[in-house]
Length: 128
Image 1 (cartoon, rainbow, N blue to C red):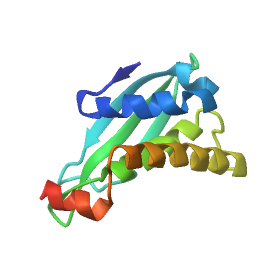
Image 2 (spheres, rainbow, N blue to C red):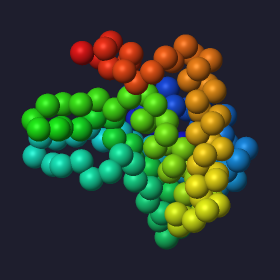
Image 3 (cartoon, rainbow, N blue to C red):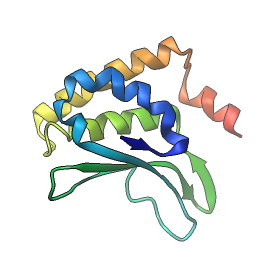
């Protein structure tokens, strides 16, 4: 799987949830999207399914809010990653999709805590 240079840190998160998502082997690329001033943020992540059965994912890492660049927190990104990974097993937003998303999110939160992550607010203070 190809992962954008600025998102390579998520590879260990993907690996930690791979046993829950059998379709993860069909995910071929993860790209990052950097917001632009002339484009409103539409969503934090997108997953595309191609006719050959492969997938590509894009995750937003920042966006513009009233002309001010805002970085998404690590927690935002891994929660979005969990949501998009759940789509590899359950395409629709059904109860099974949400249960899988929650399970993946719990795994990711455990990893964040293990790495010493405190909060979004504390992280935003270091970004300024």
